[in-house]
Length: 417
Image (cartoon, rainbow, N blue to C red):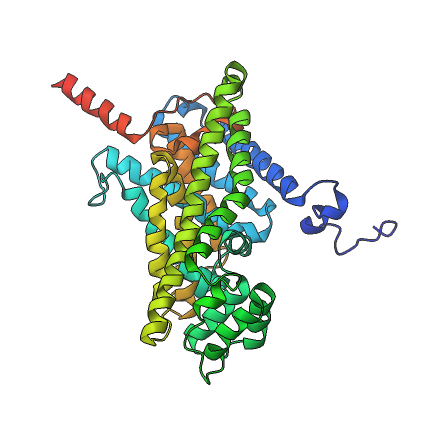
């Protein structure tokens, strides 16, 4: 110890995994360690539990609780990820765990929500979640993960300078008119400045005018169309990578057998998703412009609830996606919306935080997911089940969904009768 003096950063995980020590991205390293440690811990715990309960290894109950305990212990692997990921991972996996529990209860006739059999229930969940997210996007950006908020701002039609001014205006705070006017002048020149200035010279700025949303043009229709085209151009390469890479990694045999068919399906899927997101963003832009045209004519003050409503109606664009894709989008947005609502309520002291709550939530969620994966795989999302099959090197047959499980139960019941 005296020969090798200990540095305070020697055992720091952040310093060991920082990009100064690697020739590739830190996030990729952490993700690989996370997946590897989870699968290793899970398999090790399953082995230890089976050896310690060798007299019960043929018992179905023994196997069931083994997977739950192993999943909980393996959840500790989340600590490998950067702290900024902890909240997102825990909320996302909690949503998946709730989905498994709900599917199991519904399949066995124990519990289900009224209207859960409605064909567009997933679209409704997406719409409500998106409405909360788009409200936070304008009014409470600090309640969204930084990377997620940056993604929305980057893909969205409204510049961050204008968003900040809108937030201050709705809250009755002082608007940074100098910064806003510089942005308007830079994008639209003196014409746009002349249109915006009368609204900003008031003692209290009641509303950021529509001209500030698109200073480069005086036409809201043209601005909406440009928003659609701009979003499509930015997001199409992203969706192409999100469709092609999983196809190659998760369906390698299919790609080798029919590469042209897989490529065509991937391109069509990417184009479909691009149309959805571009329509969502341009629709939000159109509603923000329409609201301002009406409010400016009626001389009304801006109202923050309109941004929630705009997010709700913009979400109708999700109907352009495939049915199974809508469910994935709803489950992707729901935890972020729930997190934003929780933080808002916590700010108003209507909620409270729990020490190490994120870690406990993640471990508990993985315990439930692994329990259902090992014992009732039909209740698990096909996407999650495929990923677990891949990482754990299992060969558990994945059904097309919970409906097939319910049909099987009905057939067994009929046969018994």
